[in-house]
Amino acid sequence: MIPEFLNKLLNTYYRADIVSEIINGYQKRIVTLRVNTIKSNLEEVISILKENNITYETVDWYSNALIITNPNEDTLRNLSLYQEGKIYLQSLSSMLPPLFLDVEEKDLILDMAAAPGGKTTELAALTNNKAMITAIEKNKIRSEKLKYNLALQGTKKVSVLNLDASNLDSYFMFDKILLDAPCSGSGTLIKDEINPKYFNEDLVNHSSIMQKKLLEEAIKHLKVNGTLIYSTCSILKSENEEVINYILNKYPNIKLVKLNLTGISSIPLLPSTINEVLTIMPTKYYEGFFIAKLTKIDSSHN
Image 1 (cartoon, rainbow, N blue to C red):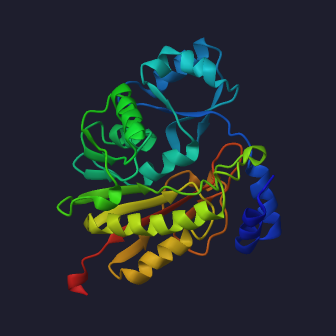
Image 2 (tube, one colour; image 1 turned 180 degrees about the vertical axis):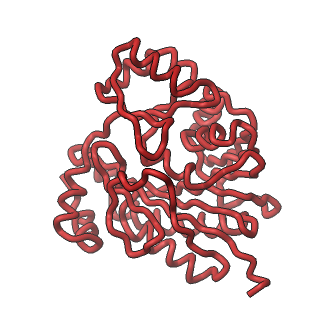
């Protein structure tokens, strides 16, 4: 069942036909994985999947992403590929934010809410394990899980800080920042499994307050001309466009950048009130997700 407050919010934000598509998309996602290029490559992974009669499809916008078409997570987890960290089971939507960050080997990178480590390890792979990455996770147990995944995936230059990202020392400055913000998870719901104890109106309201606070903190630590990706696994405008508009209105030196990536026209999108952002529709392949790309300009030249 879809909670009444969620149904009302969705109908406030989207047309009725789109709301019914969203609710249809609240289903169990097909298993997808990312090839960990630190330890393996696409050819090796495909060859082992074929040996084990595991069928797959490729993804238009990322050659290292595979959709498993006869999905059985247990079979995948039993493969040496998985146990040696050569693949990472990751949703397609969650692979996108690191790709939009345009990271380079020389960058100082901050992942502000890093556990369990899917995006952090992807950033390490995208920079050939050469960029200095700071990964923050305030929950002690989750930070241990993050460290475990980083080690399994073979990352070399990632420092894990077990602290609240809103209390980062002011001397830390970064070229690229990924804030995959804590959110309500309204894009990842499975309609028959929604637990009102965990998913409720208070969570949505609290998430929006926390997101603004974290995004303001991120801005403090972003170098001039640096890039900041803000993402959530929510499709609610109070956690997405409204947060971005709040920031743009408050910080005249922060500008939106259009998201570009070859092949993204195949991604199912929801309509948005801001042209430059992406709001991904939940489907059996994709979690509902929001992504915005920001940059800091030098206000002294205005």
